[in-house]
Length: 168
Image 1 (cartoon, rainbow, N blue to C red):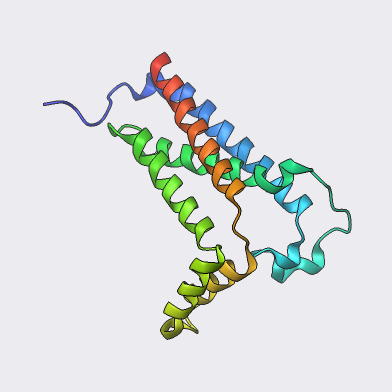
Image 2 (image 1 turned 90 degrees about the vertical axis):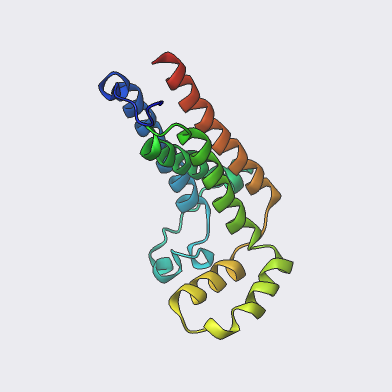
């Protein structure tokens, strides 16, 4: 019978700390680009505080549109993998779960899908979850490049954890 959990955790801890630190740096980079390059009034979680947005808006060019998606996919995939790490299939499970979740959320912003969901959620109007989901779908816009950036970020986290696993 094979062991599901690894018993050599202390040997792999420094590598995992490096991966954790890289996920935090990626999250901060993506958040910085998001905060400095987007209009807060049209952003789901920032619209209530849009009056506090600095007048200076930075243009990050083509990176500003999709870099946050890449950074956040890398970050959250890596954090899921690290949380599941001793498990045998942590890398595959973590990568596929975030790829599915992020892709589903992006696809909900497609007009055809959001229209169908709006019709289907009529019974739940007034509930915080349904209202938040509807606001997310109507304020966002579907972008194939965001799906590609998500796939690249998930792949990066998968590769980074694969390299760590080979070295330890």
